[in-house]
Length: 126
Image (cartoon, rainbow, N blue to C red; front, side, top):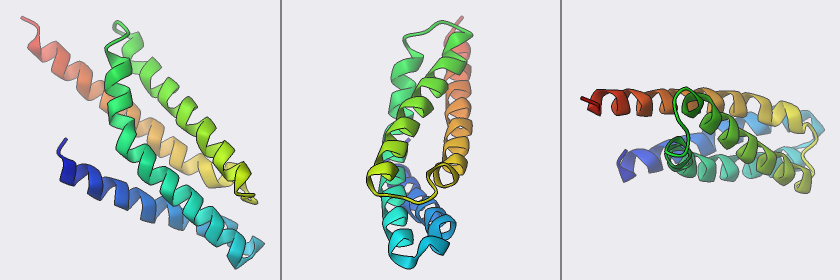
């Protein structure tokens, strides 16, 4: 992927998932919602920039069929744990509701990425 695509994707993640966090935590008060929103938005931006590289790195360390499932599981487990810790530190009122949908989408994206890597690997073999 090119740098422009990565930056646009990361900014999109900041807006979408930061907005999601604001909406989920709004009833706890605007200051809480804003803090949760920036925590989620910044984390999503950084995770989006790193997730493909992490999948690519892990993909090379496993054989088929494990490399289709383990890199996405490990990536989402790691990023999800970091995300939960960040929200706990930010005192986000509804942590699980805040991170559940973004992590579900991230896992789907990771599976798709691993599948695409597998297709490229299979096509290159004689």
